[in-house]
Image 1 (cartoon, rainbow, N blue to C red):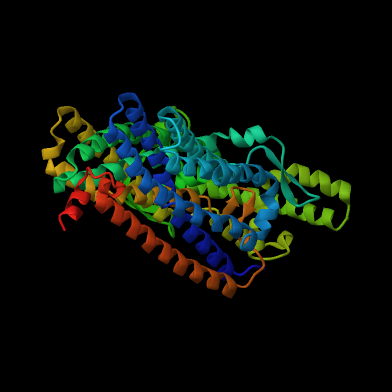
Image 2: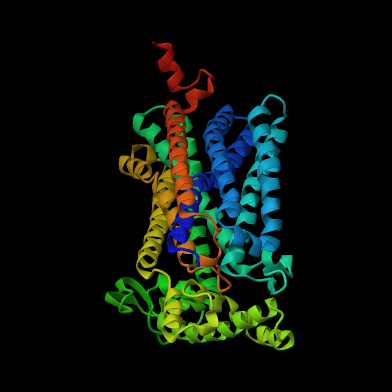
Length: 520
């Protein structure tokens, strides 16, 4: 059996690399479209300041894009190094979206980024704007294919298990691409990226305004970020609601864990504004409820119930018992014993095969599992409630906070008095790191909420890892942490350096940093 230490270290390494990589993705997604808006204004008005805005914010986009590509490469290699059986199990489904994403990211996207930076004097205004638009589309479509793959892990549709090859095989590519879970994740994730970029531009522009430097440049950047950010923040909230709705059918366990809902509540279920979950006793303390709200969000009805974790666990006990039959039938087929009977049993219980495999964590001969082991496997299907409950609420609170910040900024922009609102400018500056926190919380909720599965309801995490030593994984984890720390220092140094220089880094002779240098 695979050691718990190996599984924990493999999960930790992937979590570290994935969450570090995702520090760069949201800004790339959002800033690319802000560049489209700024350059469109340049083409429409012919005013040089909009070109300077596109080039300056594009420089910060380029630094961020380079780090995003660099840190993303290692994640795909980890599938083969640390998650070999997982790669075998899902390769038929993952191959197509990851190959398309690779073509977009490394060929289309990278080519367009090069044309964006080196095409200013070689392309017409309209031609360069087209490149910028295609670059933004390429960046966002690249994210689409990653989220299609991840959405399938959350809700495995369009595929069946093949007992001969011992892997999942694709039956409908369209079902995988248009999976409601994947589509909801895509639009919610890219909208979060737009919020991140808007806060980024708003915050840095506010710093210039507080310093009373490059005022016209900062004012125009602030206005664009305020308008785009307000629309994006509203979209994040609406699309987040849609993501919650998809959970009610695809991942009821995650939804119940996020809401610390241990018992099945009468429809429509209330939303817990605050509670203190206790997973040991399956109870909550200090509950503050909003009647009906969870039922309306999760089911769009007033009469449909959402199951609580206790009922889900009881249901999973029965699925584990059914899965034991499926595992036994699969073993018989592999050993060429009573193949006709075994095939009939596997067909009848195949939907619960993954639940039977949960017992592999405790014994190799699953068919002899004890009631206590079945009970423990069923308890394993309940993810860690406490961190999910509070992470989700902090993410939601930040989402509404961004809407309020952008609403304030947009209102002040319309009144044309934001330059003198120091409270607003300081709030925008202080908010700079918060979208990154919100994005990381979103991924934490999505991935921890899926445990104990790599493929929800199909392949348990403890069966997905490679047969390598825990020391090997620990060594590579420490190497990644050291290398990524160097990259983070380089990223922060470059971003801070050019942000402090502002548009003066363009070398046009029209901005503050250049005038200061000329006086030395």
